[in-house]
Image (cartoon, rainbow, N blue to C red):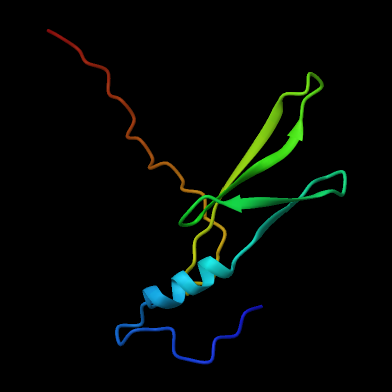
Length: 95
């Protein structure tokens, strides 16, 4: 874990762009595959990392793309949204 010895927040409580860029530049993204191998992805600029992680049986490469978000907010699992109940349809009658 990176420990920064300065305030990373602005007066409004937002992460300073300089701090975000420093963290982004210091990041390295590695993917641990199920077979136990580790593949390192290359920074493609900004928050995007890209790299070859496997090959299929014909020798064609399989690529991975990862986008990283840097935030001060703690991660929470998204809650599933329940659809709004629909009103029952009334039959239309003519006289």
